[in-house]
Length: 201
Image (tube, rainbow, N blue to C red):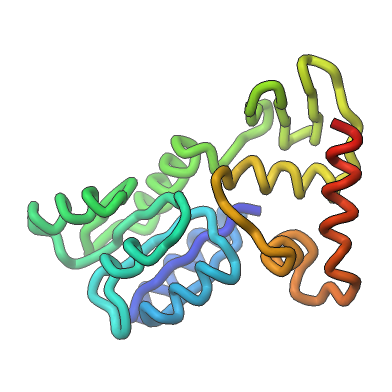
């Protein structure tokens, strides 16, 4: 499931954005201030950040600078001057939406950014990292056009890693994102699963 973080100090905006995005099937995390947003980003590694600029603790600008990985960002803010937009794009924003906004338009822009950045796939889409190709809809994995049989958890782990290139994960990161917070098994489960993937590939 694609994970999205909405960070805004206005509760009404957090609620309406959460409602619209959840209805689209996204897993949504909400933060009321900048420090909470950074904590959620670090713990859950969302696939997209929707950031207000003026927030307590850390501003949206500061959050964008603090993120240590390549993740799409949409600024959703009342700052609509040209210089503000330019600053947002200089910080790596993929889109910039001024308040007041249309929730339906926001959803459409979220879909567009996720598709453009490879974070969202539709049935029939293929994630290709030669010589690997993965089809999320069918969980089909091919290496040099040869089909590789993976279990569901093996596929999920491989797909997760390929969607986050150049990112270092701890075992805890992977357990939380793929096995869930309620997993009470051995953290070496990650090592075992990766070994099986390597052997099959």
